[in-house]
Each structure stands twice: as C-alpha cells, then as structure tokens.
Length: 169
Image (tube, rainbow, N blue to C red; front, side):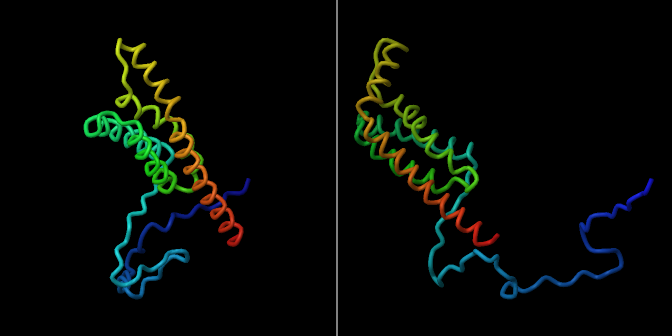
C-alpha cells in the first residue's frame, strides 16, 4: 500500500526567512470588479445581508415603522404603505447575491408583522386578528406594489449576476 505525503498548509512565513515589508497603499492592487470612487465623492454604504439577516431587517424595520406610524400619524394605513416601499427596495438591494430570492418572500410577511401595531382591533386576540385581516385586505395595493418592486430588483440583480458568471467562465 502506497503512503501519500501530506504537507503543512502555508499559514505564515517560514522560520529563518525574513518577511517582506508590506506594500505601500498605492501599490496594492484592487480586485477586478471593484471600482475606485471619484475624488471627493462620498461612498454610500453597501451592506450585504444573508437571507436571514434581510428577513430580520425587513421585519424589524416594518414593525418599528408601524409603531412610529401609530405614534406620529395616528395609525395611518396610507403612511404605513408608503413607508413599506423603501423598506422593500432596501431589502432587495442589500441581500447578498446568493440569497436574493428571500427578499420577495420576506416582504409580505414583514408587511403583516408591521401592520399589527397600526391596525385597530378591540376585544383581545380575535379583534386584533380581524383588524389585521381587514388591514391586509384594504392595503393590498401597497403590499403588492412593495413585493413587486422587490421582485423586479431581485430579478434584475439575478440576471446581472448570471451574465457576469458566464463572462468569467
């Protein structure tokens, strides 16, 4: 039986060999797809959330916006619907490429969760659920609009990602 040699991974400089000094900042190379910002331009944040992270972001943002809507605007469903659109867009833009399909899925769930503080419902849990169902029925246009916006952004990102992978390979 033949024995194969194993080698240690290259996890640092070898003993007795001096390490080379670090390159100056100008001499470092940028990755192929990275753009250099224009001089004096402000760089916008570009977070990349996992599928779970984007879901949590969307849920938390909509719940907080629902509470804020109830405090400031007296539970205006129109204001809540308008606030839903940018949250959907941000969720679709900030989710990483491998998890883009999660954005259109979590958007309607987040809409329903955020609708809880906004809806009027008396009489305990049954009244609250009836208010939620009524809110979902009357605000379906905002719900579909936000979900459609997230879906379109996700599809465009996915097409761009597939084209980029085909060019490389």
